[in-house]
Amino acid sequence: MQVREALFGRRAVREYADGPVDEATIRRLVEAAIHAPNAVNAQPWAFTVVRDRAALERISREAKAHMLATMSAAYAGRFRPRLSDPAFDIFYGAPALVVISARAQELWIVEDCAMAAENLMLAAYSEGLGTCWIGFAQGYLNTPEGKAAIEAPREWVQIAPIIVGKPKTTPAPVGRMAPEIGWIG
Image (cartoon, rainbow, N blue to C red):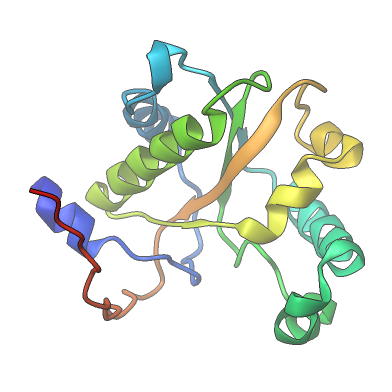
């Protein structure tokens, strides 16, 4: 697969077919992630893989409750109905969650881990897998309870919770607005 094909074809997937993602595949995705550019070659990332269905369901419930308790009024109208629904799974039934964390609070950890996340998502797409960055999980995974749920050390900062699995359907392309480009020289 050409890079351009992956860049233009990758979509956020929110419907997954049954079936696990095997360890070898996840290791290949992590291998792609660690080849991301990163500031001063700090390579600040660590990876936690959750494939246990009961753990994913528990994290989903607790993350929803955390989000409902802490979200700003600006987002309440948009997200409260979905987050209040006991049947709503923030992980959309995906068989695996890969949490990309920074091992310590340092400069540029968000940027470094976000680039690793993009590499992981593009690599997954090239293997016929779907991914989605789950923002609903981020706040909770950085609480003491969330860190305990994924066995993350206290000093880690969870940056990118990415679900991975075989897509049930292929999401339709999403239109893009024309970019604003300023030219100097």
